[in-house]
Length: 116
Length: 111
Picture (cartoon, each protein chain N blue to C red):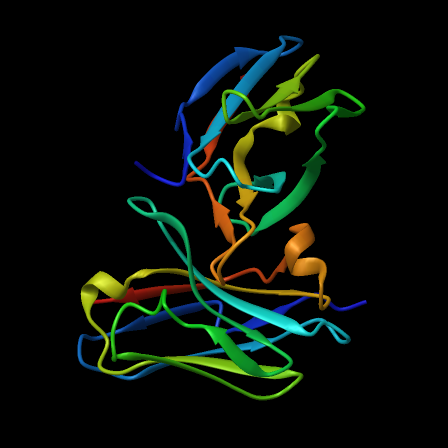
C-alpha cells in the first residue's frame, strides 16, 4: 500500500516567493497533520484536519501560512510570501479517525524547504 | 517549562551496550505515551507504545513513571542500525493540541 505522499521533496526559493507543499494521505485515513521540523524547535504541529475539516490551526505561525484540504485525498500548505526563517522540513502525516489519540501517525518523507 | 523534554544527546555507545533514555512531561493528566524513531534525513516512524505496566518488544523496553512524570526507553545489545534519533510523544487528555513530540535524543552506536 502507498504511504503518505508529499511533493515536492526539495524546494529552493527566494524570499518573497509563494511556496505550495502538497500531501496525499493514506487512503482510508481520516486525519491529516502538517508538521514543521527544525533543529532549533524540533517537530511542531502546524495544523490538523479531521474529515477534511481544520480542527486546530493554532500552530500556524502567522497569516503567511495557510492550509487546505479540499477532499479526503489531498491537502496543501501554502506560504506566501516566504521568508528565510521558514526554511525547514515540512512533514505531512495521516492517521485513521480515532487513531490520532492512540498516537499512531504515518508520516510522509517530508518536503525540505530552503528560502534564500 | 516545555511540555515534553528530552536530553538531545548524542549518546555514543559501543555495539552490544545497553542504553536508556528518559523523557519528562509536564502535564500530569497526560494519558498516552509513545516512542518514535527518526533516522537521519528521514521521517519519524512509530517504534512502540508505552503502557502503564511497562512493555517490551525484543531488545526494546518502554516504561512509564507517572509519579515522576517521565517515560523511558531501554535498548539492550545495541546494534549499529539502532543509530537514530528517538522522539517521545505525549498525548494529553484535554484540548485540541493533544499530541506533543519531544525534540528527540540522538543515539550513535559505534563499532
